[in-house]
Image 1 (cartoon, one colour):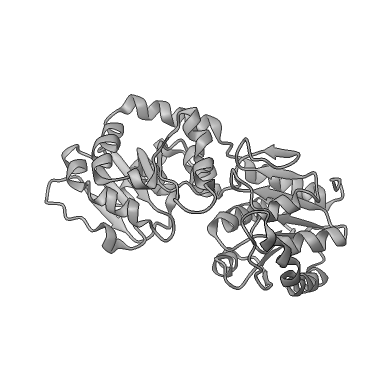
Image 2 (cartoon, rainbow, N blue to C red):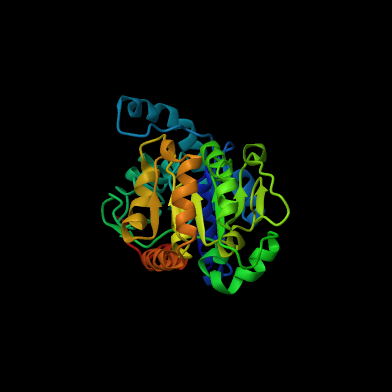
Length: 366
């Protein structure tokens, strides 16, 4: 009998991307699997899940505090309606297993699954776990993490489930095609810049502000700016290209085109660039609980990346530190090897097999 799998997660790409990667891996192993995603009306899943071809059930969002506090005591009252709606989803979908990736929607999924004795599998993306997965980890022994030192009980480090086109990427083999795709020179040192799906003003201004120094050093740039007006650069004929785009859909090709990247350190970005061996300058988002800096620490500690504070990322810093990095082929090669040795590429398949086993009743609830 085909397994019925309910995948709970959304709000941001940090939750939705590994959810979709896991769904695809389950479908590859069990082509007849019935896969449904659970999300809220306000998250990226509203667009991304239907685009990927999976049914999406929506329940009201209940914002969660970032830490254990008195605010957490108010959550149960707010949750009641969402738990009821989630129970109605369970009635329709009749899942054999629930997989939670964190975020608002995972809490009611965990609560209903526990009450109905449906097996639970938890995957935490960030080095610092969120409140939803701290709760979910209490209900099951099947807890998996993207980073080695994530503090969750009985957690197993497997890496982050990522899209197959990234997990299977061979950067050197794809480099020539990738550079042609973006209108880049086939032979010049290449810097990729991205601040995430919405861009990052600090990164945009710092790198574009060093455009002259990058050009003088013979470095070309592929810049996903979110807001292109923040990173407009004019280059004269004969100078290395500086290509500015609002968004890069084929990020796998961007990784293949690049020799190094300047980026935020969300869980997806850190896992992806490390797995494909792309040397990184990580610029953690300076808000939240510091999870972005913690995400980067394993890669930086292994020698695969550099960590720079948001406030320290200036055009002057880029003109010296980043230019120096792009001109040092030996250093780039060592960073690439260090990063790719650290981050597994098969987390999607590992997690999918656990999910299928749990659906079949071969996993034990904790």
